[in-house]
Image (cartoon, rainbow, N blue to C red):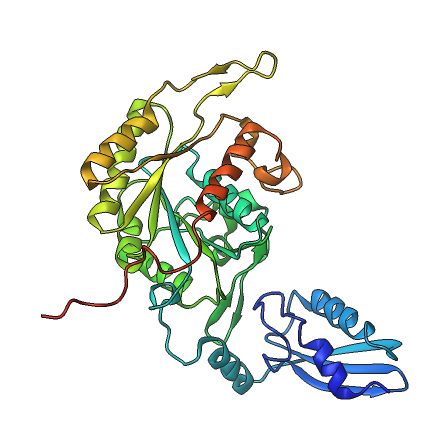
Amino acid sequence: MTSLETLWEALRPVQDPEIHRSLVDLGMIADLQFTDGVVNVEVTLTVTGCPMRETITSRVESALLSVPDVTDVRVRFGVMTDEQRAALRTTLTGSDARPIPFTQPGSLTRVLAIASGKGGVGKSSITANLAAALAARGHSVGLIDADVYGHSIPRLLGLTAAPTYVEGLFMPPVAHGVRVMSLLPFKPGGVNEPVAYRGPMLHKVLQQFLADTWWGDLDYLLLDLPPGTGDMPMSIGQTLPNAEVIVVTTANTSAAEVAVRAGMLAHRLRQRVLGVVENMSSMLCAGCGERTPIFGTGGADLVSNTLSDAVGSPVPVLARITYDTALADPAADSVPFVVHHHKSPAAQEISALAESLASRPRGLVGMPLSVSPAR
């Protein structure tokens, strides 16, 4: 005869789709009864009208129907009280404080900030597709759309869901395995509403995305920086000194010269400049296979050599991405380029970049530690 204990253990692997933790461990299973093969289970949701009700129902039913003697599962929902939500927040964060988890001693999350000197070089496309490529390899990936004025990450990933707000914490929506925070869902006027924020407001947005968001245990956190050397790149440099910066440029000399400045800012803020990506490096002829450098040549090499001399250590060219018109926009079914066009040269080059970045074992080697030398 199946016991209630068996049913509880069957539910334990079932995770909340937004928090990515066990419903049982989060205290979200309010009641569980078993009579004549029928399981009645009550799940307390974090908010009324939770968009993940159907997903939770499906997961709970699937888990319980796998138990012998269970013939039917009936799921009903309740809503957490203020006290329960406060307890949930404490369970997730360990306290009521709001530190940035990625700057804490022992954090194993690798923070990658994708920068550029100017707009139009495909920085956001590279960021979104690199995140999707890392997630496709089984890594836990988060992405912050830090290009507040020109946010485009939701469109590139086909993301339409908004974050769920639970007792002071945002639960980021997920698209293609990537957890995303962007300003777009917070604008009442939608995509066409301009963002008129000055420096302090930009820093507040960044703080909320970093400290007031439940990211879980990430392998990688990517940030799509705005182009140039303005307030947001400086705030990120000060807030995330452990971030590694990847500079995106084209082969065009004027774009490369501006890209150098983005790398120099990162260096002055004591961030590691990891390397350079040359986007739209050349166009591949579909008929003959010949490559044409439509935006010139040598851009990435110029940035690499200049930054290497400035920082006193190698800043290599990490990748050269073939020009592909489909890379600039998501597919009609809102699937990232690296997934929808995975056999194309550009997709394979981005995937190779992801593989190269992921080749370094997860650990604290090379990360700054919160220690000071004794005097």
